[in-house]
Image 1 (cartoon, rainbow, N blue to C red):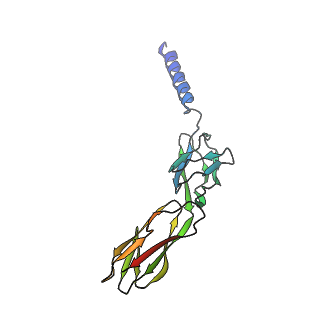
Image 2 (cartoon, rainbow, N blue to C red; image 1 turned 90 degrees about the vertical axis):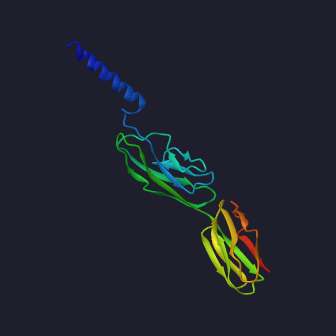
Image 3 (tube, rainbow, N blue to C red; image 1 turned 60 degrees about the vertical axis):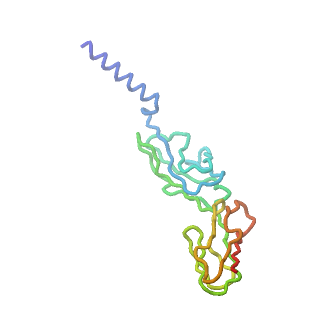
Length: 194
C-alpha cells in the first residue's frame, strides 16, 4: 500500500516532464525540403498565418510555430526569391498526427534563366566539340547558336572538348556565373578557330 502513492507520484512527475518538453500537448514541427533556394526572398506561410522567411541556401525548413495534433495544415508560397521564376509546394496540405513531426512538404523553385549563346568563327570544317558540364554540342560550321539556358546565379563553363582537324579553337568569356539580374539578357561566348 505504501508503494502505490509512490508509483502515482512518479507517473505524475513523468507526465509533467513530458508536458514541459512539448511531448504531452501533441504539438509537432511542420516543414520539409527545398530545391533551388539560392537567393534571399523565399517567404512561406501555413494556413495564412505568420510569414516565415526561409534563409537563402537552406535545403530544409521548419516553421517556428508548432502545429497542434490532428490539425490541418496548408503551406503556401507568399513570395519567391528574386532569382526564381516561380516556387511551388509539393504536398502542401494534410492533417497532423500526434507525436509525429511533418517533414514531407517539398518546395521546388524554378530559377530564372538566360540563353547561353555561342558564336563560332574561323572554323574551316571538321568537327569542333564544345561542352558545358554535361551538355555537349558538335559544331561543323561557323555561326551562332544557343547552347543551353543557364539559371540566374549558376556557374557556366564552355570549353573545347575536341579540336577540329588541323585547327586550334579558343574560347572567350567561356567561364563565369550568370548574373542574378535582368541585364544582360543573354550570356555571349565567342569561339575563334585558327
